[in-house]
Amino acid sequence: MPIQSVLDPQGEAIEVSLKNLDKIKASNFRVGKKIEFKVEAPNKERCKEITNKLCKDFLVNEVIEKYTFTIKNEKK
Image 1: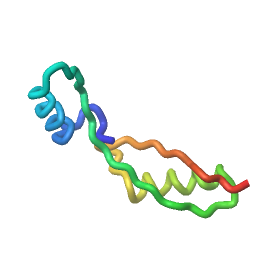
Image 2 (image 1 turned 90 degrees about the horizontal axis):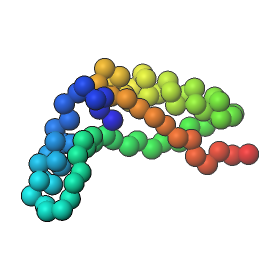
Image 3 (image 1 turned 45 degrees about the vertical axis):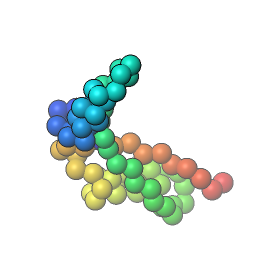
């Protein structure tokens, strides 16, 4: 997701389009991306470490983007 101080042309395009629709009051759109992938790790904590490293080193430009992640399907 773009950080608040970065121009988001896709979000602005949505707002401009909505101005043509009556009775819809919505604003401050921010358009981001969703990335899904699998990580093999011995436990949830190690999975978090690996995922965080992937985000910081390869997937996210932290100068203009922020990120969050969710771990699903943890094996017991």
